[in-house]
Image (cartoon, rainbow, N blue to C red):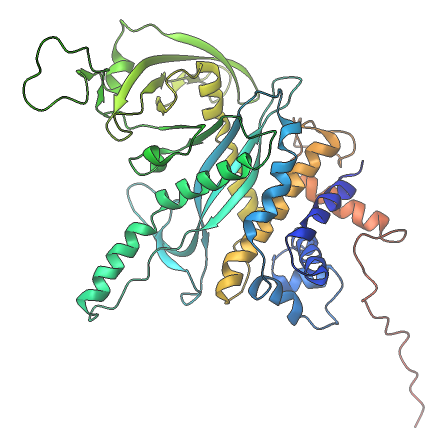
Length: 469
């Protein structure tokens, strides 16, 4: 089946999200236009890409500003197809969480705040105006052979900071601001997104009993996220190297004196585990950087971390520095070690480390969304549009990735356009390949049975003849 037909079939399932048929058709045309337009990805260019620049454009702008629809429901199509992408009926669901900044230039856009630029160097912090979103992506891998995972976004929640009052504001305003700051932290938005994903999985019989394994970076490995994890959910995250750990509490001998202890004796820190030569090194095989590799790790379990609480035993996994060379025959270099914490003390090491390696795919999502899809380029001012337009673009992007898997699998087939000469090989199709193929199939079928309506292009006809004076 062609990629374009599969993608349009997935978009047809959005009909139940919108209250009116005409609203759905506008959202469908807008999604096609935002994906296929060139240069700047704006609502106006999307309207031109769908051939409606000679009609009233106000209704297309009202799709994101006035129409009543819930953005999270756009991602239900991915969750409905998730059981068919998993290797077995008992296989867990892997996901990754991270936040991203959509840079803006207008300071008065609703939700725009001064944020720390993550691309600034460590020795000089830069600031930028931007919108803050928290994204959760489902990680799916090939079923028949080892290969790179593909991240399908399923949540893209708006997370604006609290509005800071003026300097001469009343003490009550400053107190309310401090309370609002605590409620709008990225950790709370992230754990709410995880709980929402868990609730959506529970609504489907085929994913209700599956374990949800979420991997994230150190910004979500804290006392806010770990104790609030929903049932049947495991979290894997980066841990600081000097974290204080404790062994399980030994059985009491005799009558206890004083306040009862909650934690056992202190365990070694992750950095001490790395440097301790007496601890055995386990080599596990994982798919990373294009091929299967042996990764040396050290593990300590079960232990307790005060940030997770006394009711949650965890395991600490230390990935030793991996050796690499910049080119053949060059000096042997080493990467930095990785210190991981897992809230499931019984999770096997290959699954744990592979889930952490696949987390990098959400960074590829951020690059595609901002560099190729122009998620941050929309020039809208309505508070609903500021939140919904990026979510509509990310949902369309997620369905396009899902359509590529359903139509041609994870591998790059002959259906896609040939690679440039400077690209020797490609294991899977990139977003550029998908967009090029969609545009090619749209123009190839436009004369026979177009999926988009291009009848709105007016034909001015030949220029009128000028009579001689």
